[in-house]
Image (cartoon, rainbow, N blue to C red):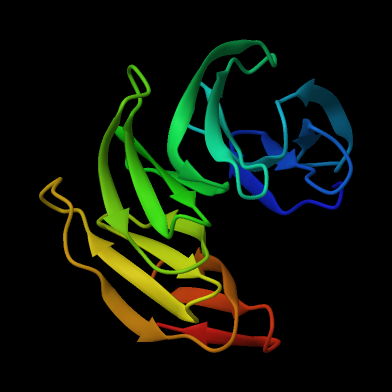
Length: 193
């Protein structure tokens, strides 16, 4: 895998974004690790998500308005949208909506998949980076605030944020089926919630 910052796995391939040296995303074989294809994905592709039908790529040039790119599985750009904030980084979906983190805005945009409209905004924390939807709740890592926030989306409304102390620089999160894990980049630690 390139020097990947974000990747999303679904189906027989991984999709990897390479923000360190190019404006490409790569389709990578899960069984062999071979790069099957590279696709142009716009400036600074930071997050990539495959929803079973489309690839969604967040483009987040440092300090600039972020973008969202809808692509076919063959790398054709079908549409581009605004992310609703500055420096788009992470992406998650609950099936109906996309959620895009806006690092320098400290917000998460709720975006309708059907037309790319921003239909709501969650205030998360300084340096909101990676997002995770685990079935009922949306989790966000806030690198600069040193917190992880959780949003209850069970009733499809935007709920209050619950903050957790998370160590220094929580920049990545994952879910193991029971607990949420935060990788704290600056501290070199992992927190479990």
